[in-house]
Amino acid sequence: MNNRNLLFTLALCCILLTFGAWILSFFHYSAPVRQSPVAQVLPNLQTAPAAELKYAPPRPQDAPEAIREAVMLGYNIINDTAQYAPEHVGNELTCATCHLEGGTSKGSISLVGAAATFPKFSASHATSIDLAQKIQDCFARNLNVAPPAHDSRTMQALLAYLQWISKDIPVYASLPWALPAKLDTAHKPDAAAGEKVYAESCASCHGDAGDGSPPLWGKGAYSDGSTLHNIDTLAVFTHRFMPPEAATLTPEQSLDVAAYVDAQPRPHFEAAQSHAGGGKKSPQGK
Ligand code: HEC
Ligand code: HEC
Image (cartoon, rainbow, N blue to C red; front, top):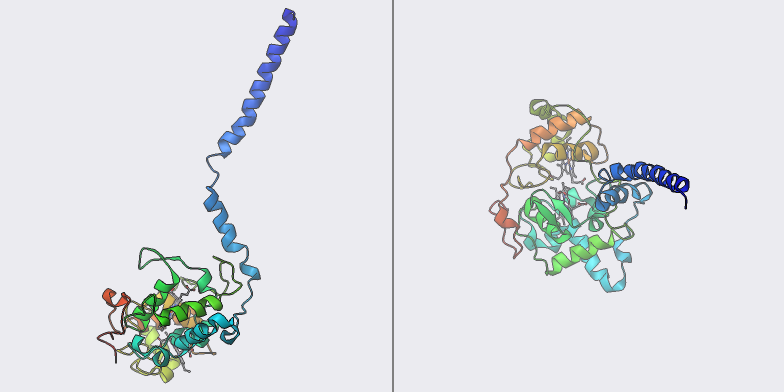
């Protein structure tokens, strides 16, 4: 190889190296802003199937024979807790007061798909909880009573039933019918205005003193540890579902009446109550 060829080869190498470094710099700069694999997958998981999810919970009586009895019992416990799990009722409510038709109605808080979305983070536990723990929470905080133990017939029936009505819902799908955390308004809740809304739109069923049927406050009502004991959640529930089949309040009226109801006295939730166990009634129980 003569000198000229050598120089030419060296020059070519320099050009290639510079070009290579330039190309590489793209990878280098884009690398730090790339998200971790988990962060990239999760948004897809939560948005992709939502639009196509059909709301078609199977009927409890159509469950496979091996689990049908448990599924039917779970369905009955939700609809009439006092009859099918009397030792686990501490006030005048039943699961169906908030989860109509065994939780299959879109006219109240639906339980369809719940089994596919647990374990889930729980703010009150500051960790993720499974479906059985969530059920125990609803007993302790809404029915104000010691919840059924995990290995009890009552709990196993509820789990079988809830799993059955989530059939065909993909694990961790985002449910289009899930309730939003709050209403879309900047309105500041006004309890005094809410008292008027209550008298006009709620008292006919829930009573002037909140002790109607079902009760909204007082000793027969859900405890102050309920997730409904929160102005935003109660406003969403009211705006969507109350009065039943005739929900016409504006978001602002819903927030006002929620602030009024939320300020009324109700049984105090004792954390000790939430421990699984027997059928000990809360002190506020009837
Ligand atoms: C006073 C109203 C009320 C009663 C009574 C009630 N719940 Fe709930 N429940 C709620 C509210 C509000 C939510 C939604 C917010 C949350 O996650 O706590 C909920 C959520 C749930 C969920 C989770 C749903 C999901 O998709 O995350 C399950 C499961 C559940 N309830 C089961 C029950 C069972 C079983 C009973 C009867 C022992 C019951 N609930 C009684 C108000 C109630
Ligand atoms: C026509 C009767 C009627 C009217 C009016 C009515 N409700 Fe209800 N409410 C019910 C019934 C019945 C339930 C039990 C669930 C169901 O059947 O839909 C219920 C359940 C509730 C619940 C959950 C369970 C509980 O008792 O804690 C809340 C909260 C509630 N209503 C709030 C309101 C508010 C606020 C208003 C006024 C804007 C209102 N309701 C108006 C009949 C009524």
